[in-house]
Structures are given as structure tokens and as C-alpha cells.
Length: 199
Image (tube, one colour):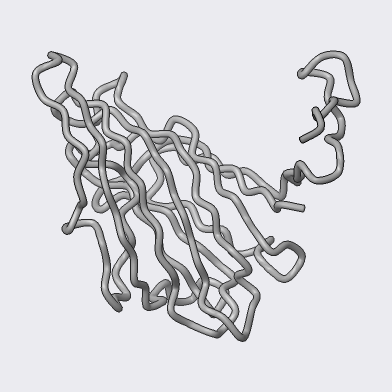
């Protein structure tokens, strides 16, 4: 396999990547400030076959709540796409006394219109507890296939654990998905979500 050479001398100065690596095209970013939700109702269309959402310093205002999302086929009037998913969690506590890697039956969905939980486990709300990660949504504009998604997050939990959540599934609809909403299970949150298209 040939080496991939960047077109610029320094990573911070990179303006393009060689063919085959894949480029992220920034579409928009939204910042929550004690907000109930962040919704992307524009920018998700047939332009790209994959869209990526990056979660940056998502901080819950309520303690012990999960971070979740749902999809819409009507521009955000309703967030109720039927989903089937699978989820597992890896965690390790700060006291170094408990670790686990396990399937998460309480976070998966089976033909449900409920919000999909993305956080490894419930977030804490003190100043140093937050979540970061990403969600990939594949070919949302398709009118032939279901809409697959994959997410990886890491968060500080309400009880001092480092928890990584791994979620994959599909929106079981052949209608085009054109909006997405992120929110906590209850209460408001802070943080930034950036949307990119993948070339």
C-alpha cells in the first residue's frame, strides 16, 4: 500500500487531502446554551451519501440523564422515525475498582419511534462532566433503502465513570430523512454540534 503524502508541510495548514482519503465539508455548527434541543432542519439532503455530526463538550444541566437523537422525514415537524439498533458500553471508574464491557439492552431499540440513546451511560451535570463523540448517518436522501447510523461517544458519568457508548442501527424508512434532533432525556444542555458532509 503506498504512503499517503499530505499536500502541505504542516497538519494545521492542510487545505486538501489526496484522492481516496475522503474530505469533510463543513455544513453548519450549532451551539446550545441552556437549550432544550439542537435540530438540523437544513443541510441534510442528497448532496452527500454520508453526513457526520460531531459532539463537542455536551454538558447536561440535569444530573444522571442520557444524550439522544431522533430523525424526521418531514423537515422537523415530527421526530418519530421507526428505528432498530444495537448498543454496547465500555466503562471504568475513577477509583479503578470497576470495569465492564457489555451489551446494553436498555439502550437498544426494536422497531421503536423513541429517541435513540447515544451516551455510554447517564451524564453528570457538574462542571467537569461532559460528552464528546460523533454520529454518522448514511444516505439519508435515499427513497429505496433504510437509513443506517453509527455512533461512538465518551462521557463523564454522574457517578464518576468514564463511559464509552457504541451504537449502530437504522431508521426503518424508505422516505428521505431530512432533519435530526439532539436532546437530553430531560432538561437542557450546553455544547456544540457540527455537521459535515463526507465527499
